[in-house]
Length: 203
Ligand SMILES: [Fe+2]
Ligand SMILES: [Fe+2]
Image 1: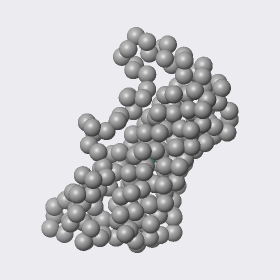
Image 2: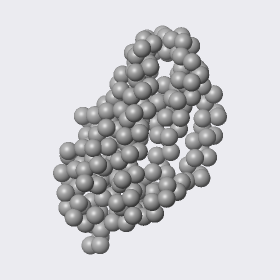
Image 3: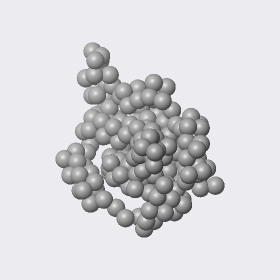
Image 4: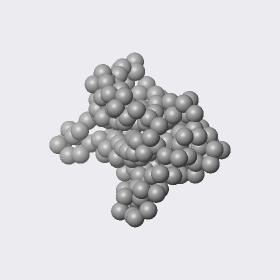
């Protein structure tokens, strides 16, 4: 971890993207400052009726998973070699990586939550209760604080979310949901970059 930490800036540069240059949720959602906002939402509500329960169940699962981000950030900050501060009191390189990674991930739950809310097909209160439970319960993935095991885990986890968001994109595109397809595809793209980063750490 100490060896890799020396190259954190290079990793951040290579695998992560700054807020001004990366997509933001509003790029894929109706613009609430526009006069056509209500019309655009109506259209989403209409086409959303065509997608079946299995589809919405998968999308809600993906959303809740992304929304439990506070759990993932606090878990990663506890991995051996990662700490909020370095021994000399300055910034710990790994903390910088975790914060930048979290800042990218935060956009996923944000955009998905807004979309399923607008769709009119989902009982949002149940989703919100589930998310609150998930965060309150925490998790134990069985890797302890071992950085090697944890990064093997995150390598697979990022790949798994890539596959899931990408499958949503495929189904959405097939049924003519261009906006949702684009959105899921671009989230999948983020997950692939993260997967490549964690794979490189493990290597
Ligand atoms: Fe994500
Ligand atoms: Fe991710």
